[in-house]
Length: 358
Ligand SMILES: Cc1cc2nc3c(=O)[nH]c(=O)nc-3n(C[C@H](O)[C@H](O)[C@H](O)COP(=O)(O)O)c2cc1C
Image 1 (cartoon, rainbow, N blue to C red):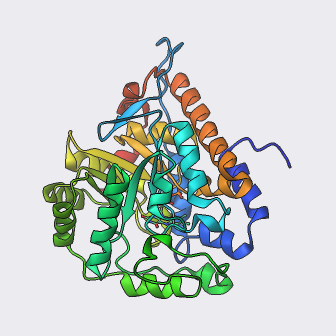
Image 2: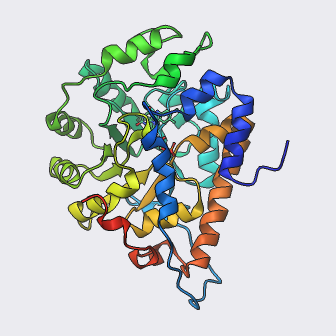
């Protein structure tokens, strides 16, 4: 195998390893995949304005997220069905997150139960949908709380499933035995039942009242994921959320939606100081992370590359992905004249982007 140097190398290696339909399910986006492509392309259009002669001999990548210390401003994004990449699935990701001392946000649609993932001992957030059957959501929140999760992340950009044309063409064969283990107490979600179960439980009638309801039933901080507008971010704050994740679901929901990075300045301006704002979508380089933080993100979430690492080498592969990101972020910070995450300010990026979505 050639030496895998960066996250793109891991993507290629994963493509040769995974069945075509599984790679397509992970890599693909909605419709023409315009948003999917833009998610990364937008980072390349922003240029950095490095500071020099600032003494960067010691660098600190540590930060705090919702009051908890973390080794770097990188969170593992929630992604369903990790066992399609590797039999160790979400547990391998949790082990890697624990060893890197960063937060893993576990997807509701995981192939491993939230309790089994929590037992690894990583710092975890739990991602949730509000389902038609509210008892399921309530029960999952209770279980996540008892298992020691630190926050609930409510994903709000899936009122309905999206149109995934690559999957319409290839289909997705699910191995027998694979199931959405968080739902074992409610439904049999094995193989053919998975899609039917998800479709039957997605609730297009959700409103801000459902967010208020969720906040009212849990002592944990609640974040919303899937916000792309300042007014929606403000509304979420008024409901009582503790953080906003600016995201277009990795280009998997509304094609031609604005990218998270483009929406970020508007959201940051709308929520003001005191609310932590996170961003995801297309982050593949340490310089991408610097740009996101310069535009006001507290931290970023990384999605697909974690699955590429998992597919290539299980837990070890995820650790390599996180090590590459760490090395790239550290180097980018040094070359930008930043000795700590707090030194990353808006002066480091060209300003075209900040006004582009208004
Ligand atoms: C295979 C896959 C499954 C995903 N499943 C979920 C999910 O269950 N819940 C959710 O909120 N987001 C889900 N996402 C979206 C990610 O959390 C994240 O927003 C996105 O992948 C970030 O973009 P990136 O992959 O370009 O880093 C999924 C993404 C992928 C690629």
